[in-house]
Length: 160
Image 1 (spheres, rainbow, N blue to C red):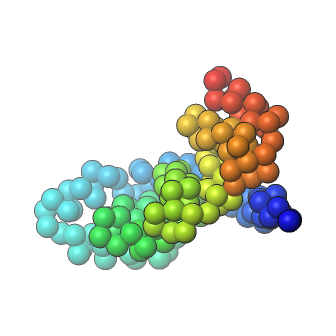
Image 2: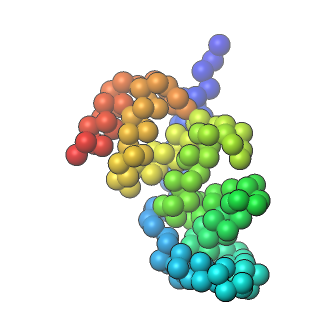
């Protein structure tokens, strides 16, 4: 039987990385967690959602992330779509959420190649936990072709 993990991973890496933005924290880009919490505490949730929606539709990664954050408990599918948009816009926090969500399979169907793709993107930013996860995924062949040399390389990077 043909193992589809490797071709899918290669397609993901070459097809998306070439056009993907760099990954960086988006929590202070235009709006902060404190501002979001203040709106909610003041009972101005609808006003906040309206403002974030406009900004998110214009491609602002922080607004996309915060919409994901706000919808997380009550509308997980909507939340996922906003987190995904933020990740695709280069939001570090969105990438982290997406990687874990694809691995867990709680909100969307479990998709280990996608989880690996997003963990690798996160690991490339220097995120220590993501480096450990990439090492583990290479070691076990979870979402990617098993590769012990790559596993050791990422484990070594995580220790530095």
